[in-house]
Amino acid sequence: MAKPLAEQSNSISIFMLKKWGYINSKGGQSCGVLTWTSFGYENSINFKIITTSKDEPDDCYIKISYSYSDIYSDDKESLDYKIELTTTECNYGGTRYWFRCPLIRNGHACNKRVGVLYQAGKYFGCRYCADISYKSQRQGGNYRESSITIYDIENFENEITKYYYKGKPTKKHLRLKKMRDRFEKDFYISVSLLI
Image (cartoon, rainbow, N blue to C red; front, top):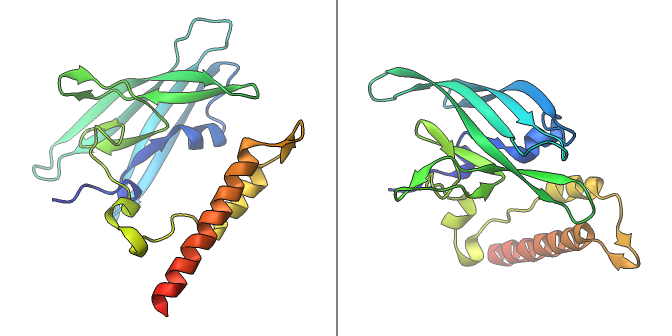
């Protein structure tokens, strides 16, 4: 049986929560709702994020609550639990937030630091615990579709504020160059397969 695809699974991304302004590095709390539509059904979860400032004890978490319906028995269950958040310092200042996977695997708590949690049955966890794969992992060799699009490159380019720091290219500038190179390589491979 094929693993579920990450692209088709309900997920919570720390990066999107930060982008939408729900996570504040100065500390505080925020609430919101995430909604997905799949196979004609709408799913949503309510969340509350608590973050603390650098001066306070590290007690950061996201509390999620939602209803889970069993597709075989139509039984509904209300779930409400906390997922720990952890932080790392960024190279040029600031703080980056991560989820700690709350699932138990092989009798031990996973606690893997991840940026995205996927729905694995009733609960949300990392893609390893949820046994989820990416679409590109199912394709091999020269037939693999490019995972980078022009839209991705343009969006990433708009996020870059500095291309050089102290005369050296920034990490984002180098990453953009790699994205462009990868896109060109994948484009030439796909064109050569069509000829």
